[in-house]
Length: 203
Image (tube, rainbow, N blue to C red):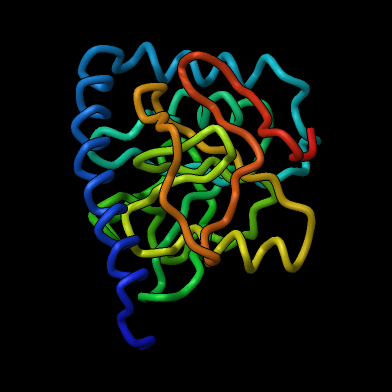
């Protein structure tokens, strides 16, 4: 493990403080918007030029007060897309992704979220919906501190073209996310207000 430095300690403290602040704001937004936000991100996503039907799309089963992508997952599945959910394999490792569909058997894993059971086919996504605690207007996000999505995006981007779309409430937007060299940038952001690409990202 790298030795602790004042700079690293300050960054960790800044991230911890922001996590606490934004989790409270996210909870308020979730209570106020709930199901309406899930329907809104579904409609915003489906309102753009959809990717080819061969695209494998990674979503996530909502945890705590995360914005709910399940309405979008159902709509994508109905259109013939293969939808996968992330699975934590071990600490400090990229995520794996198992195929999901309505009625799939789900089990608790990782931080307590639900994932398809062992035996579901594993596929690598071409497009990821990425949950978070906070995001800024440059395309960086703040997660829960495990680094799973950063490692996953780095690995997949080294293999093929990939699109990473953040999913969150507008209330989770902040002026700047504290970050370091290992943090991976998103290509676009999906909230109840709309879907927008970040400057410099492919459309």
